[in-house]
Image (cartoon, rainbow, N blue to C red):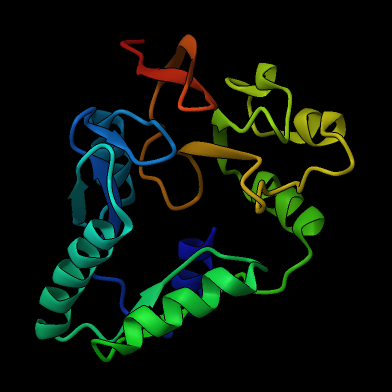
Length: 207
């Protein structure tokens, strides 16, 4: 949704997508999404994809250095800003601002301070389709892993759970939406508890 907002505003030229990959598993870090699905997502959205590869487990110092290395390379190519989807976590925003300042980049937060109930409904109403891939069982029933992010889900979420999962309650994989050329067909695989989180293995569908 952050990318969608930036593209609609037309104030910035988007040149690349970036995310971390846990190299041991070939999956998106924290979300648990298979690398091949990430590739399909980037291809459908239509932008180059920069993968920041990190080990497992990954010390924070290693993560930070890998990120700075990649971002410094893009800065040398003329990039001036980095877009984030954060909404209201002040400590995360401050962290990003401080780290980017070290290499002379500026962060952009298109969704900052938005009402997450309104935003969640806007995401769904705009045509974005996504599935919950990871749940923190300390914050949400693990049976939510694998559910579609739709209005039925929003209705069922406990009142203490943020509708956008902004407090880390859950993470998602977006497989269709207004910025996608084609939807990514997926099916739900096994659900497993790993490192204290409930993951569902989202699989590419041949249908």
